[in-house]
Length: 463
Ligand SMILES: [Zn+2]
Ligand SMILES: [Zn+2]
Ligand SMILES: [Zn+2]
Image (cartoon, rainbow, N blue to C red):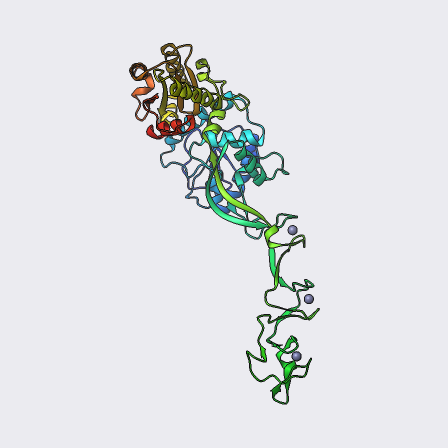
């Protein structure tokens, strides 16, 4: 961890850039993929830069820091790269250290090989990053997710379905909605031709044609066929038509099918796929939302604790955490008891670790975890066998304290706050432990159940 990073400079031409001592110069991506660099700096105009970074991400450098030596813009480099090289090249080192530390703490230090591991590792190693779709003009689906594409070994993976799966698993959060597409049912193409057809025979050969409607016999036909020697006469029943409204009118059906001669008011609309020629009814088209995605709290938790570990397999485990559902059941049961036996008091307490993530970054992953471990074991000493704990978010811990009145609850609260004061990370700006609670039955609202009172308390904590 203490060695300096190998920094590669990629420029297939003479360059004005003052390459610092110790950096290794490469002329091609191929040479670079034979090397073993830690950080890459690319000196290429935009198009070359984009080509190079795609190749590099697909090679042995899926996660490494890659900077551009030139002002770079464009959504592709923004998504796949790490921005412009800092003006002071010394600044690369702390960025590298931070990146290295993050990756080291990812998935318990296991190497990332699957798409899931790589994409999670990417998001984890760049805390404020997101998966951002980029426009792909003239493609059957006009958006793609470059990061998913380059970090995927298997080309057959469908990035859209994969993202949906990750979201269903609770690892990815939906971000800003950028577009909504309608796609062919058969081939998912968005290249659709919305075309008007005859509602009777579905032919596309329809035309707008002013027509008349004879009230005597009900005949509807193009208005020319009613014209006879300058007057109007029904070609079917031969009645003279004098007064619009009483003898005849203009029907709303002024579209005519040239194939079956049907008259109609509204054509049928079909969405013809230009790629596979499937004919879709508009209401049958697939609707796809194009969004950004980022890691959820659960996603970050998994990254930290190991992707295969279960939620309770971590440093909070010594509190014998029970799952949220079981906790709520117990709380509801306590609520019933307090209704039945008025003298029975039970307390609910929530402990929120504010800016835990930021504090971990400041003191380093290992230091942060050690500090939390210490706090958690002190909390364990402060509570009783019969108390129950759960966690609803990475930074929100809940305690159910049966037979504890307001006084007892306040005593425990002060104890926990004192303990938190002793933490080495407490000195760092931002990190704070907030504790609050309610005691039942006196602080309950009428009709409140476990879920509602927990929501009220977490609102009070700003969680
Ligand atoms: Zn027709
Ligand atoms: Zn008629
Ligand atoms: Zn199609």
